[in-house]
Length: 102
Image (cartoon, rainbow, N blue to C red; front, side):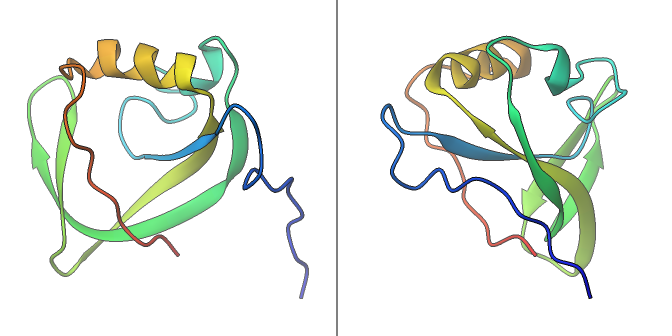
């Protein structure tokens, strides 16, 4: 069995956030996160339990449920988090959901 090695971001300053992308932000999609600046750092593929909804131009997801949603995990700096909020149409200072990914 092989293991994937990646840099630990736990003690970085400034802090680094991890994001799970599952729709248009995935590699190769219209809003491919890897084309954004400052550049994200690939962590790996993962899954969460959730329910996907067709919102037209992009999917939406509610955490929980029984469906497995596949996606990608990236470490991102605060500046990229702000850019993602712009792309996703999120208002500043709104609460984000967290989930365990496997």
